[in-house]
Length: 257
Image (cartoon, rainbow, N blue to C red; front, side, top):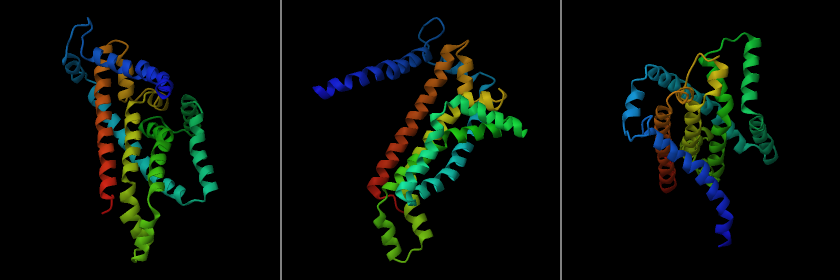
């Protein structure tokens, strides 16, 4: 009884600021401007938006580019952190997390100031740089946690059987770390395509991603903005289901090739 009482504030918070907003988005997505039920009207209007195709193209380019770059940078860093001495590991993790304590907008404005001083033109490249700067820790930490949990006896057994460190890495560490990689990709791609402050600041408003598109729609068509928001939430839910199923399959099968 006491435990349930302690969980009450959290349950109220979730109901008020998570469940209720989702219900409101769903209601707006399936109603028209007058509040009448319209199951597909907003989605049909959304498909007719002339700017949607370019927005989706920019979002895919920015999201996938950010995810690939973060993976290429983040995986070696996460792997190194698992091999570093304990006291050094804490310091290095702190170096990646401390910038996140600084206000997001301040970091983006500072990045823009650096690009301006260097004479770098604002566009897709600067936007991707800003996205990588913002979401790189979200790639590093899941991979680091997954690699850290790998049983060291697997590596020792591979070495005893004559495998080189490189072969042991590709045959054991990489397959067993795939759940962390998949989790990191999910945590990077979805926020990347739905952000709007980064593109507004680091492209001087030249580019528009799905987050910017939703923000612009809500000013004159809240129902259509809710429709695309609901579609993104469904996409996020599907990706989470796939990630969880992949994690369970890896645990059952050992995750080895």
